[in-house]
Each structure stands twice: as C-alpha cells, then as structure tokens.
Image 1 (cartoon, rainbow, N blue to C red):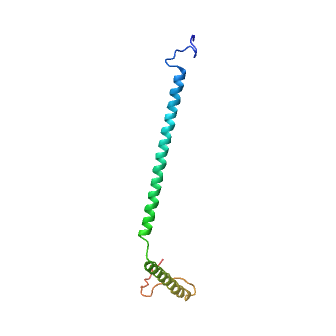
Image 2: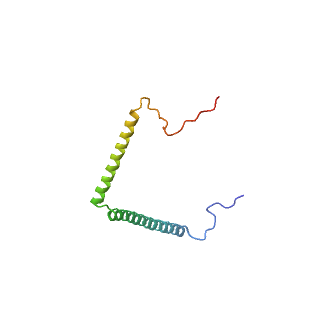
Image 3: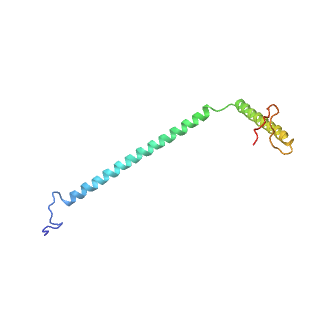
Length: 116
C-alpha cells in the first residue's frame, strides 16, 4: 500500500525557490542559445563575405585584356573556318561516289582466298 501521496512527500526546498531556480536556469539557457546563434550567424556571414571577396578579387586580378580577348576570338574563328573547310572537302569526296561505299586502297594486294 502506498501511504504517501505526492503532497505528503518531504521536500528539501520550498516550491517558490524551486520555481525561481527553474526560471533562472531557463533564462540562462535562452541567453546561451542566443549567444551561440549570434556567434554562428556572424561566422557564416564572415565566411560568405570572405568567399565573395576572394572570388571578386580573383576575377578582377586575372581579367583578360582586350588584346587577349580579340586574339582568342580570332583563334576560335580560324578553328571554326578550318573545320568547315575540312567537312566541305570530305563531303565533296563522298558525293563523287554513286553508292557512297568505301573502296579498298589500290596499293594493298588482293590475295586469293582458299577454296571452300
């Protein structure tokens, strides 16, 4: 049998003191969480600013001059024109054949195959 209920249990501290300590601990916890979130937010902001500034510095420092840009554009245009010429020549050779089947080279000897 249970002779004691919750109200009859002995307490070493008063309920008002218990409530005060509990509220004080909750307040300390909330303060600590706010400090941690502030520190975390500041560190994330600092990291973001650092990454953006390093990226912008890199882009501005290694920026190509107008001469380099024009030279690259000219090389690209020459490459495209060479490819166009090459494919036009290949298409001319292929159009000369009626069946467009590949032919055997003339300098390769043809050997007699063994009888079946």
